[in-house]
Image (tube, rainbow, N blue to C red; front, side, top):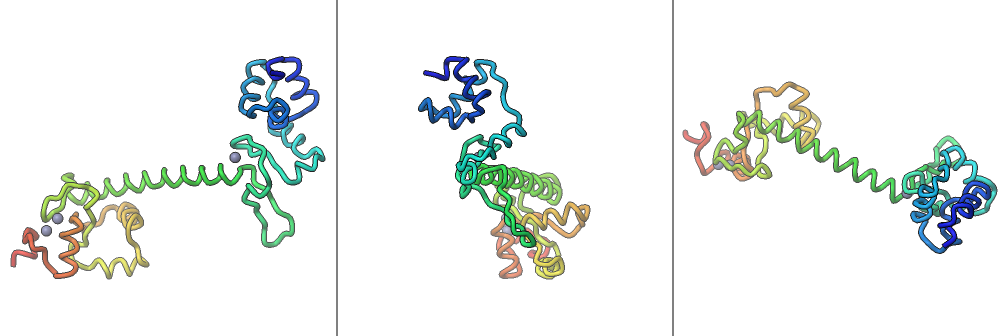
Length: 209
Ligand SMILES: [Zn+2]
Ligand SMILES: [Zn+2]
Ligand SMILES: [Zn+2]
């Protein structure tokens, strides 16, 4: 294996300015392996600016391919989300490939989902006086719990907020310092209240009458 020879690898990488992908093609291994051996041999890694210079050194490959800064793979231009500015003719090829971009988006969304979840629990705890249960039937599975407008003016309120529901309602509640207009019901009790005006459990103050 050529890459196990430090002098050879250094010559390829530093003197001939080949990238790890090109070297891996010669050796018939993955570029990851080349990266490992560059480290093992203590060969100086290239800086991003050196990398960019090499990337655009006139090789026709560089017109159709680009190295992704995130995963380090040499990819076809079509594997990048090309940015075309409406007022300009030129295009920009981002530094991250589509795969890496999508992965980062997913990570971001997962993170946001998590904080949405936290926000929801916080709000539900507040309006159930720390019990985290349905005010009517005592349902404790948090997946079933919802915010209920105590005075039955939910539709009106949501309309006033421009169709605010789901996580944006929880955000609104926190932003507005937990106004005294909600309670926590489970999906069943809340549905029955909305559809029939009462819950058959008859546990809510307005149901007793
Ligand atoms: Zn990538
Ligand atoms: Zn309930
Ligand atoms: Zn009920």
